[in-house]
Image 1 (tube, rainbow, N blue to C red):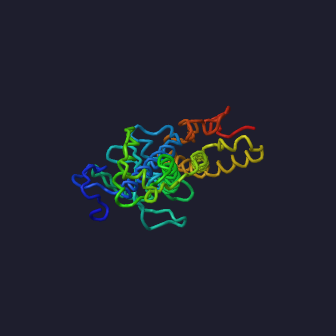
Image 2 (tube, rainbow, N blue to C red):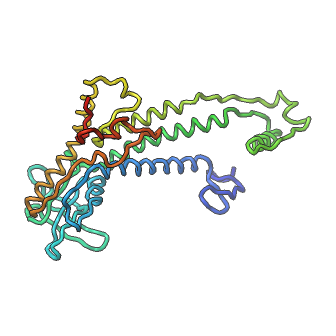
Length: 322
């Protein structure tokens, strides 16, 4: 081993560096980080499409509204006197604040160079909040992405331990022979040991067993339970596939109330913004919970709720009828 973190003479870097390759710990950290970002994207896609906006002016992008609410916790809906068009973008809010702690100054600055300051008392802007916490939702996504990453890494480790359940302890003279034997085994190539090597030196060579139980199914159940928890946080009707058969009517109703508490917190804040927008600009903007936006599959490829697809039911209200 040369410098810490590098293998001497290793030119097969996993990241394309010339002349040096990272050690296993750096590579494992890279894989873990990539797994984390995978789950961030996965959970973000579920969150950004959970609401459907109706009646928006053509100059407003629904995706930008929801993205701003997720990333910043608020979005500014405004009309420009220059062109008379409506826009909805992220904003930076600052003091002074009103009696309800709502900022009275809203500044918009976009990458194309546009910037403008709006005042709450003017009739050209409305501030939209994500939910009653007035906080960004991205923190929730990060929280669950980290938990999913730990479970996925545990699955990978458990899988790797099944591939190499044993280790060989030997003296320094036989290390090279043992490595060649293990490499030949992985490649499916026969390997012959000489009389003076490992096979006749049992006192110098020992096989250590690292037999590990397979716990992939248990970890998969944990991931599905965690995903069910996340869907509840989003306001999607769901029941863990492993528990749905054991729920009573009262338990199912309690589960629905729990889900609606999260859903209504986000929906009502958007509805209040729509009321202000329609009153101020004489528009007909509305928002609804998009219960059937995607098929929420669990990690086995099965529907998270066998009869709802997430929040699908006969009357479309997203509530399971028993």
